[in-house]
Structure formats: C-alpha cells, structure tokens
Image (spheres, rainbow, N blue to C red):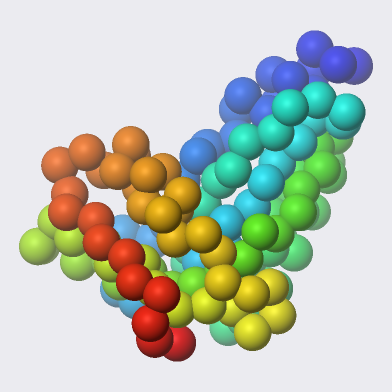
Length: 122
C-alpha cells in the first residue's frame, strides 16, 4: 500500500491552473499516508470560494489514498499573451498562502514567464 501511495503522490501535478484570467488559488500539502509530502498549486476560475478548490482536490486525493491540508490561498492573474503571472491576495477561510513557494512552483512549470508576487490586495 505504501508503494501505491508513493506512486499516487508522484502522479499529483505540482501545478494545475487556468490558462488565462484572474482566479483564486490554493497551496495544498499532499501526503502519502505517514510519508513525505509535497506542496502543489491549484487555481481555477470556476471556484467561487477557496474552499471549493480545496474540497474538490481533497475528494480526488482521498480516492487515491492521499491526505492533504490547505496551507493558504490567494489569487493568480494569468496573462498568457504577456507571459506573466502575478500572485497576490489571501483566502478569508485559509489565510494567506506563502506566495514565494507558489511563485517557485509556477516558475518551474512556466520557465519562460515573468512571475511576480505581492502580499497586498484581496
């Protein structure tokens, strides 16, 4: 079971965000039972609340035998025509994510982008 959980963890994408627009995001720590974890970014325009993003993700992960906890949230402004993503704001329910971690994750996923962050704004 441990191997399966580790394989499931490896299969969880570090970043899944919408290709364009301004939307909420959450920073989530995903763990295989009793094992190491990794932090992942999820941001989508369909989510009215940060909890919508987190709850859907938690359900998907639970089916794979993975645990998760929300480390905080914020907003992403994704401008593909400018190759820019700006990370800012916070979640009322989960608090502010560590935007510097989110920025590092985004840089790995979008190496050709300019990615900036600020603690200001909602």
